[in-house]
Length: 213
Ligand SMILES: N[C@@H](CCC(=O)N[C@@H](CS)C(=O)NCC(=O)O)C(=O)O
Image 1 (spheres, rainbow, N blue to C red):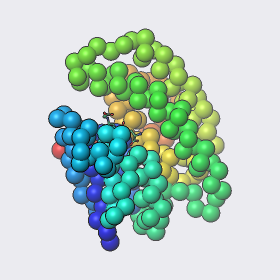
Image 2 (cartoon, helix red, strand yellow):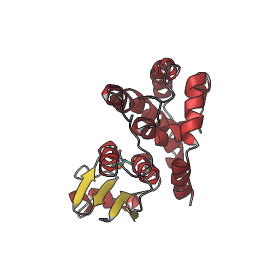
Image 3 (cartoon, rainbow, N blue to C red):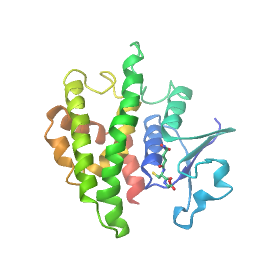
């Protein structure tokens, strides 16, 4: 099998999405660390792997990709018969397509903004913008109301199987659970059960072990 390389950092939420997918698929890979502190991701040769100067970048033999969600879809497609299926076998593709967009365009923007304000800014010693926190908590609460309704009818977001869509949430979700925003998840029983379920998957536990090393 052609070698798989992930260029990035174990602390990058976007790279963690890719690691989670590789572990679900039981694939071996090499992590090529990118020294973001010194700006390695903004210079060649890294820019020829990801012209946007962001991590991760991915190589599978001669195939080079960037954008974490495109990488996970590539892995799921290329290795369809390995590890966890990560799709909805024998079912219409429509819900998978819809909920893929929901994660990227409804959930991720407020979740990432909240993580920036409540996790990363304190880490870098800059002050949290409380107005931005309030605004994005309100946005996330509305998204989670939709999730609560969906998860009262379906075990996972796209169907009754764990899919890439659930997996895409894991890195941001994991950070949010360490902030006061956790209360928004705890207040919604179906969302809360879903969070407990997907964050306890062995593949995700391996990603956390990598990040905590
Ligand atoms: N949409 C991209 C986002 C990648 C991204 O934002 N990566 C962050 C780390 S999690 C990064 O490289 N930040 C540094 C920068 O943007 O300069 C993906 O999903 O791969």
